[in-house]
Length: 163
Image (cartoon, rainbow, N blue to C red; front, top):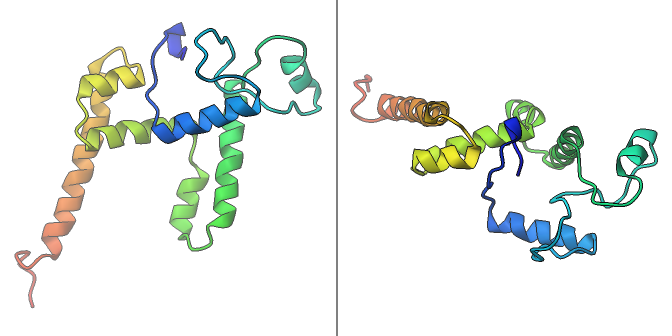
């Protein structure tokens, strides 16, 4: 993947993501596992009949989603999920409504830190130039842990609360 400042980096994905990408490539009559392929990782299967879409995706050659197009695709999927989830609290519904691809990136960093992935590995996966940038995720996990243990200790039998 080419990220900020035109730097190339490898982005780790789950096995389920690879299965989904293979299915997407099959839908496009492409081979995901062909090392000679120059096709983009994600591309629209159908080009909408709008002048901007036709200008971007018309003609020959590999076409891919723009950053904005991919963001819109994620938003549409999230809205579809929200419509199907009837038992969510209003707070959870708002949280999901505000989700974004960039938010997924932060969630990945925080979860990786919570699972004790080495900070240099998280740094490379996120493409950070500095380990100090990556340490934000470790600090966020440490703050979350402190809050959770404070809640745990304040409600336990040793909390000092009157019985």
